[in-house]
Image (cartoon, rainbow, N blue to C red):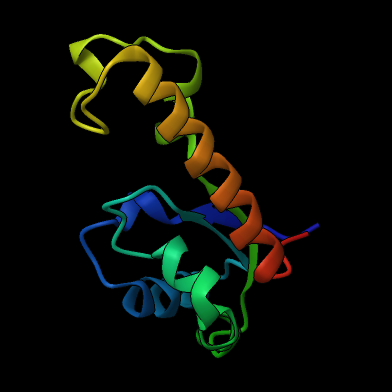
Amino acid sequence: MKIGILTVLYNELKLEKVLKYVSKLGYEAVEIAAWKGSNHIDIDKILSGGATEFKKTVEKYGLIISGLSNHLEGQLVLGPHDESTDEWFKGTPEEKIKYGMERMKKTAMAAAALDVP
């Protein structure tokens, strides 16, 4: 087991700065906030060939990726589907569900590309 931290705590900072900081604090793993708008990962970029470079950046600081967190967009699958979730995706309830499912699938594929355990 490795002690890790969720990067969304430092979403206002660039990922590399976060990695450097948390590695100095003694953390061994990072759970990357992966929803659209995250400053730490673009899962579409990972899926279009960016996984190796991303992993190297994380490993440079002696860290592993323990998970990709996308609970924000995942919430669109089961709702609520009203205006309270329009900030994440604006559309009909059916469109929100479809978008949420697509993003969760992409998140899982990105996790596989990054060899997340």
